[in-house]
Length: 251
Image (tube, rainbow, N blue to C red; front, side, top):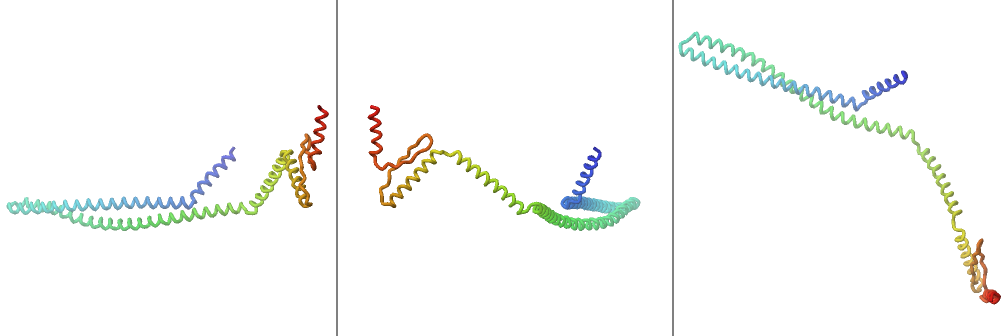
């Protein structure tokens, strides 16, 4: 029982290892990994673009706020309120610093997005090439497997062996045909055969008479319980006389 279990476990692991080494499965797995990487890079590019858009929106808002506080400072000066003007200018400076920081960050983000987009394009090209190569290699692997299988079949099958079997079967068929013919001959109609024999003899007698220049003899077939007898009748009166004598005796 334990030995059988060990054998089953070994067979299971051999099957797994065989599948792991299978070119088709390895190619499909490699292509799936590339596709997974491509999806992740696309997600990273999308996130980079979204971050870039957010920075642009923040920069625009800060620029608007800086302009607003600049206008307010100008209005305060017009109203001869220097203290309020100073406060407006301080707020403007805050937005101006934020604008500077956002512009720097946006520049870096745009460079990052451009870099990711280029890498994404390269990866898409690689994935397309990998797909084409995968299809070609799988087709070649299938063709190789078919060739190997055909070779294995041919190595186990020889034309001479097939012909030997054919010859043996031909001999058996001939033997059966001979038996069938013998059984048919044994079961044929014996009376029909005798009639055919008589007809052949009558034709021979007629041909013989023709060769001799004599009139063809008249022949009749007398069928008894056992065998038909072929006799020649040269004169009809020699046959009728016994019949008449028999009739007179009976009378």
